[in-house]
Image (cartoon, rainbow, N blue to C red; front, side):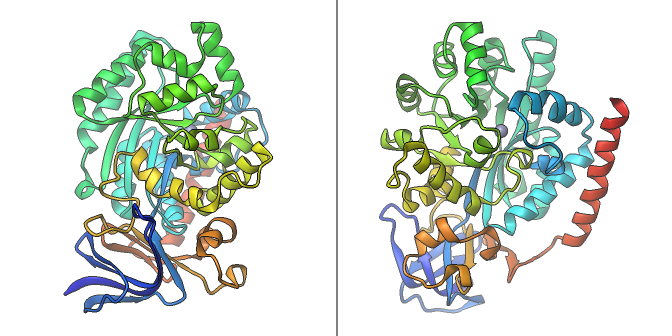
Length: 436
Ligand SMILES: [Zn+2]
């Protein structure tokens, strides 16, 4: 007998044929999907009636800084460098391990409640983030954010911190947690640092998470310092490769897109953050046309200011349409691919997640379609990208475990987390103000 049977829902598989079943079921045994399709009968310990609901692969948020939920709404409407230098970085200096744990737990809650089942994170106190992920039940790829600014002493301690996370957390939480190395960017990490990261990633067989070409200002800095644009610079030192997850990739020339494709780099599009910081419009349609599996991410909650991937899908479609002055750019299906299977590919997890297929992990979300803003029903994929919001998700399953059912998150005291987060965030800002 199966453990869970999701019955009679509108199933969007995102499998290689992109099959859709208007009335289908998904069967789960242990942590895996054991059947998907029409006419699945059989019994299960838990039967979820999915009539009037869409069943889809859990969304993959391929770039975030989870604990930054603590800084949500603290600093808005500023240029990126000023925002970082006068607000974010000085406040972050005061972060403690408890702050990051609570910020991460809040982020996990928000993701569970908006249909994200896996995310890639780059930040500090990552062992504490891992603890939050383990408790919340999500799947994650965690990396310690390495910033060394060309200082050899700092490089050494930062690399050791990155290595420590890999050693302690790789494969944690029954394999739900994996690790990466997280050099922040080419303008905060020297070539020596980046190449040592590359070697360490090879040694530990893990991937690399970084930011590339977010703003024009960044491009100017790198050109001034190294005489090359960011992607060309990173290519020339031998840093790029299929294991590199690159957030943003906004300012790219045709030549740089060709390098990304050739090296198998995995770009992550962050439309809301790019719009909010007025960084620019990434050439996503061009990258997709070149066969690059661009993923989707929210970036941190301080520059978004939410972790809602449904929101992000809509903005991904709209930003790229207006960027091209072409309404045919980025159709709903491409956007949904970015948020599911492309996210899985970008994290190297495509054999495990990103689609509803037999043998894959049971990372599944159900969204309720019986809502005024989702009626009438003609094209479910269109609804998911253009009309749905994260709070339409009513059930979230990760690794075959139900994390939320009928909007109730199991195993986390939501009110208590909200209360503690407010106090912790207040305290963090007080420490920063006292220091000024
Ligand atoms: Zn970022």
